[in-house]
Amino acid sequence: GTLTVSELADKLNKDASEIIKKLMFLGVMATKNQDLDDDSIELICAEFDVEVEKEIILEDTDLDKYISEDKPEDLVERPAVVTIMGHVDHGKTTLLDSIRHTKVTAGEAGGITQHIGAYQVENDGKKITFLDTPGHAAFTSMRSRGAQVTDVAILVVAADDGVMPQTVEAINHAKAAEVPIIVAVNKMDKEAANPNRVMQELTEYELVPEDWGGDTIFVNLSAIKGEGIDELLEMIVLVSEVEELKANPNNNAFGTVIDAQLDKGRGSVATLLVQNGTLHVGDSIVVGNTHGRVRAMVNDVGQRVTEAGPSTPVEITGLNEVPEAGDQFLVFKDEKKARQIGEARQQKKIQESRSEQTKVSLDDLFEQIKQGEMKEINIIIKADVQGSAEALASSLRKIEVEGVNIKIIHSGVGAITESDVILAAASNAIVIGFNVRPDANAKKAIDREKVDVRLHRVIYKAIEEVEAAMKGLLDPEY
Ligand code: GDP
Image (cartoon, rainbow, N blue to C red; front, side, top):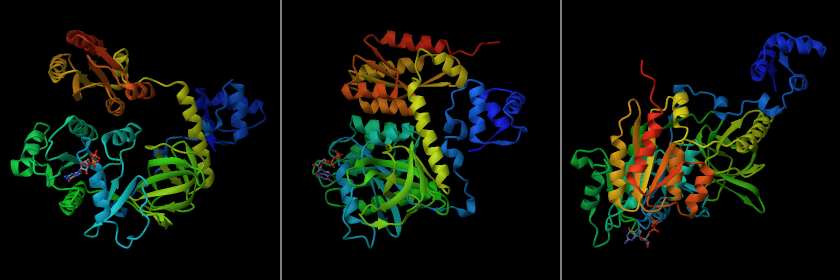
């Protein structure tokens, strides 16, 4: 690794001349812009009583810094990446299976169907990638780790059941991520199917069909009978054309981990979604806080492949450790560089876990706003009854504090769930529970994600608390 004298001075918060003096003392003559070798860096750090976290000093661990920019003329169309969301039992899994079975990529029929966490289908010569874990929890937990992989969300609503609590959750998760929504009205084969009611109910959430003057695409289908699937795929292609999804296949690959586990025989196995560039067998790669070389790649139908382009999911082996879903990856031309950065990220993670910080919290809202110019407070409300949730939401919205807004990104009835906490973490929100508590999984998530959760039994106390925190945020008036 290389650092110049003045770069090292910056990192140590010293003057370059002080470094040069120390170097002279050690018998090294150096100028400001001279590169230092590892030994000199270590010696200088020791002189200043700085514990040498070698890799951290030497390497910038932010993967984004190493992504080379693409020229517009190198960009080509790439397949959309789609997540299926909706209420439990409305048919998400059935729809994913149905799409997969009717539309396996040409030439791959007969391959062993593998569940690697994502799959690709082809419709009219256009590919589409589906993430195989339905539901918004997986979607949002990836987002909370800084990864945005979904281009289009399919909201499945059973035509015989209509909009249900998790339908609303899914809508709010997709909206928070600013991902376009296509509504799939499922179970149209059922006698009780009432697609008009679904449309009616969804207008409340600003999902208005085109026929009614809105811009949301609705597709009626029966996942179980495979009816309406083609139309759904056409609409996905349509939306992705509008979104102008592009990538450069001729760059070093980067993307996101969809799934990963330790396999007894193969070691660390990870499903990567390539978001840009092309991934090759043999590539040196940093994945989250681990690294390695791509030893083998298997596609979604179990075939060995040697490369994977934009929006393609592949399962790879060859990593030193098991990364986490949502981790980012990047290929490096230089194997040594990949190793150094991988190790530096590992160290940084250990350091960070020692000093983990709560995200947004009412207690230090003032400080956070002063530093970050945060002018919007995101809040999630869970209450025992709908009426209380609404009353609380409308009172919170009415709090008038100059320059600071409250945004209720989700409100619902029932215990605080893991999904609520994950959404809060991803959206930097505070959770307010009114006459409800977190369930067991939510409690674990609160600890893990460091989300501020406030429980109340009296509405005005909840409002008072938020208001007090907000008043602390006021910019001084002149
Ligand atoms: P998920 O919880 O959203 O993943 O829902 P599933 O895909 O597991 O489906 C829940 C139930 O609804 C299952 O019994 C499915 O067989 C059934 N189902 C799903 N799609 C349809 C459909 O189009 N028509 C009918 N009649 N049943 C369906």
